Amino acid sequence: MIYALFYIAATIAANYTATWFLHFPFFGQVSVATFIFGITFTMRDRVHSKLGRKNVYIMIGIAAFLNLAVTIIGAVEWRIVIASFISIILAETADTEIYQRHISESWTLRVLKSNSVSIPLDSVLFNTIAFYGFYTNWEVASIIFGEIVFKAIVSAIMALRPIEYFITLKKGVIK
Image (cartoon, rainbow, N blue to C red):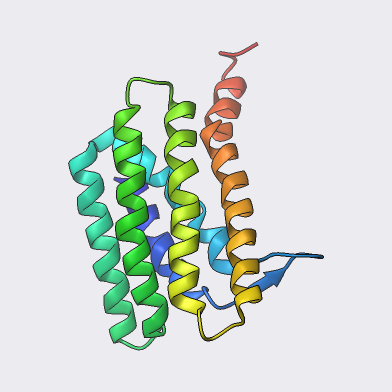
């Protein structure tokens, strides 16, 4: 349940920070939201492992509608939430179904395979819908590129479960 709460909170916080950008030295930029949203892909996978596919879809629906509620109270621009709503539904559905197809494989492979599709799909959908017409095509491409690179790195790190490794190491199970 805690993973579902982290997932929902991260989607709301990411939408709030979606228009705050950090620029790479040459090409690419990342919104502050990416630092937050990057963890949602793995949280979604953890919920899938613990609670099953049906509950993942419930969580995705709750997150999408809570983001809509945040917009209604005026905290986030409509274009951001519409982009988020569409990309969450489509990219997270793709992630869920790919993860399910590989459920018998190791955690790391399931996460990497599902995220290899959902990360680019989410980045292209969200940024095109949210920023096309507000930024130049070059800037939108730069944002998409930066987010795919950053999310892929976070996904790979989270797929290896470093926190669990160090906890186990500290307990003396791994020598």
